Each structure stands twice: as C-alpha cells, then as structure tokens.
Length: 372
Ligand code: UDP
Image 1 (cartoon, rainbow, N blue to C red):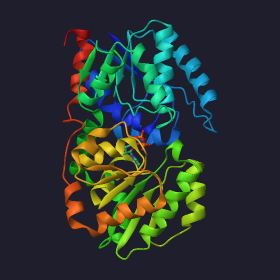
Image 2 (cartoon, protein in one colour):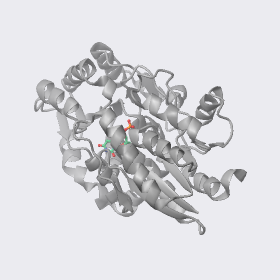
Image 3 (cartoon, rainbow, N blue to C red):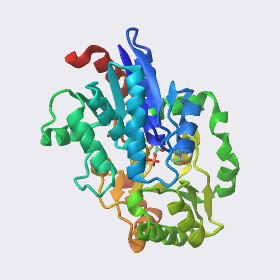
C-alpha cells in the first residue's frame, strides 16, 4: 500500500514526522512524503531535526501569503503530484491551506484521505481564520478521521461524521516525547539557548509566541504594548521567538524596539523551543500547538484568542482564554506572577491531548483499513 503524506508548515511537520516514522515501520506500507513548503524556513527547521528528507518538494511559498493564489497553486501542484505518484491513500494534518488543498486534490481523483487531528472546532468560521473552514472542508472528504480527543470526535459526530473516526491522542505529544528523549541523550541539540538562559537567570521568564492572522493589526499592537508592560516588571523577562511574518515583525519593531527585558530571537527549532518551554514560568501565546505542549510540561498557558478549538487545556485548568485586550493580557500575566495559589492551580502537568502513542495507533488503522 502506497501512502502519500502531504504537509507544508511547521506545525504540520511537527505533528506528522512521528506518523511518517510509524508508517515506515509497517512492512506492507510504502510511505512517501510531499512538502508544499507553504512556510519554507520554519518547515525546514523541523525537517532537519526529524531527519526527514521529503520525496517531493513543491517549494510553493507564496511571498505575500495571498490565500487565493496560494490555494490555487497548492491545488494544481498537489494534483500533478497525485497524477504521478498514484498513491492508495493520502494523509493530511490539521487545518492549513495545504491540508485543505491536499484533501480536495485527492478527492478529485477519488483517492481516500485520512485526516490527522480531525474534529477541532471553534464554532466560529473567522476564529481561527481561515483554519476553521479549512478543516471543515476536509471532514466530508476524509474516510479516516484521527481525532486527538473524545471532544474532537464529538464535534465530528455533531456534523454527522461518525464512520472511520478513531480517538488516537494528538501526535504532537509523540513529537514532544521523542524530542525530549533526544535532548536527554544529546543535550547539545538545545544548547543554543545557553547564553540567553544565563542572561535571564534569576528572572521569571514569560515565553511569548504570536502569529495568528486574526490578530494582525489592532490585536498585534495590543499584544506588543502588553509585552512592554510585562517586561517593565522587576525580575521578569520576556523570551520571544518571533514569527518572521512582517505583520508581526513590523509591529514589534515599532513598539518594543530593543527593550532590554525582551529577548526577541529568531524562531527556535523544535528542541530549542521545548527547552524554552521548560525554562519559562508561563507561556503567553496565540498558537495552537503551544496550547497542547504547555499542559504536558506543567506550564500555565494564557491564550491570546477569543475562542479555542482546544477546550481540553482550559477544562484541565492549565490554559486560559484571555483574548487580545491589552489591559486584560497584562492583568492575567500579573495575576500569575503575583498570586501563588492562582499559579499553582494552573501549573500542573496534564496530558489531556494524548499519551505519546497516537502515531502508532494511526499507523495501525491505516495499515488495517477500517477494521481496527
Ligand atoms: N514552535 C517551534 N519554534 C518556535 C515556536 C513554536 O518549534 O519558535 C513549535 C511549537 O512547539 C508548536 C508549533 O511550533 O509545536 C506551533 O506552531 P505555530 O504556533 O506556528 O502554529 P499553530 O500550532 O498555531 O498552528
């Protein structure tokens, strides 16, 4: 059986490299990988760490990130790959333009599609935008839906998707375990943070990531001003691996400049980012993946969004939705810095998103069809 795994961004690569390796271990499966490179640099960081050399690289990064042009190029590019490769099954992950276009191109050729991280729903088509619709489009096409949690499976059931749904855990926890084990064997994988860790030692670190399209503009300005207020506190530092999107960089340059308590650094490769999560007191983020990783490491995570498709972290008490109002961000961070009980209530290690064996389950189902 020939399986083509298609992906294009950093989070897809993080969440799929364990799946590729689990599939490669199945004797009757030939696994091929196709990257669209929708996000070139960030994707390549993960490929390097995972030791994954894609079989096909479409190199389709759209310089201005225009969604219509990107989607058109993805659809035709992936379509041509499918014509050549003729896989028995396609696997896509999550909610990117690559996942949506990959599923659609496969559907046009009547090739079955498996969807990893199926069933995440915020209920609002503009939050996150355009991801909520991207993932909804995959659902009626896929015949295998790998839901990370029962909550995600329930969301699919509400859309009458009940066949081929398997609750597997989120493969990000597999990636996290694998990476932590690699760092334990070879600490040099994450020593690039030594100098910064030494410089910030003794201070409580607030780890910030932000890149969501719906936060571009006013939201990003509010986030930047909130960071400036947080960094003004004694014995607090902000560690900010900054997404290269100009909508993020230009605002941060203008508002934060080279603030001495804000360490704005290049995006970290995965082992370094996991180390940064380990070093921090709390995470302040609008990322999806960080909402899943922080609870596993017992780090409180404040989510700068109005809705989340990952309510499990909120239910478990390790994540809190705080939106992008400047005063609210500041007060929520200050509460965690000042109120020991509030901090302790959130800083408990939980694994609502998986046990680290999701990829094996996925590989077993793919190998056996729907009989598992
Ligand atoms: N991440 C990383 N380096 C960084 C920031 C994030 O490796 O500098 C990882 C993080 O651990 C998570 C993933 O990237 O697994 C999240 O990606 P992103 O926030 O870009 O996308 P989202 O999860 O929101 O789709």
